[in-house]
Length: 231
Image (cartoon, rainbow, N blue to C red; front, side, top):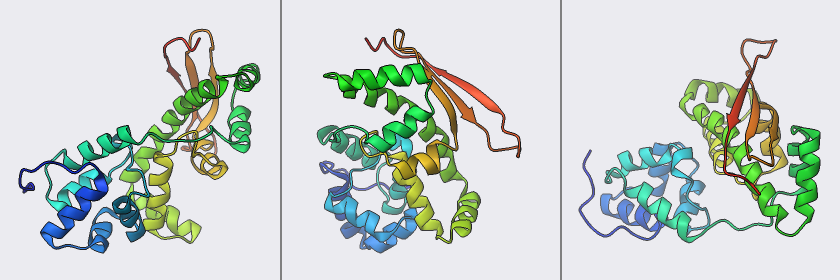
């Protein structure tokens, strides 16, 4: 791979993409085609209206690096710096999302989490717990990006396109409790997570995963995630 000439990296992914596309005389449409996303996705990154995705939860940076002939870590370095300087904002998960997440949780833990949420500072604790559950689901969904045939079949079944289906996966992988939607839960999380529970004294999270094959019987696998005391 031929890397770009040594120079100071821009402050944002958008600035890096704009500069490098100009240097190699390629278009945003060509970049979008190379990383298999709609052109609007690239437009949003360049304009700064889309926060660059978390490097560990996407495959677009490797594809960008190859197409733009950049240094191996250039895009990832910009993405991490931009994300650190512009943390996500939000008011926490909406009522529908909380209800659907609590439907999968042990009733006693769900009741206690909701009680704590109503108190000052409890919303942050709930968002932290939900993020850990979301991490498990996103880790499983990330593998979907590597299955191009499966994605094409799923797109055909829904009457969609491969690129649109890929974008849907990419957007879920970058979701947070603040941005998570009921559709995200229905489409990605609930098909993969059968049950979850958390010990609020120790912070140990237990997630029971669904396995879709072999069908029609579903086998279940338990995943235990430990964390510091939630207090």
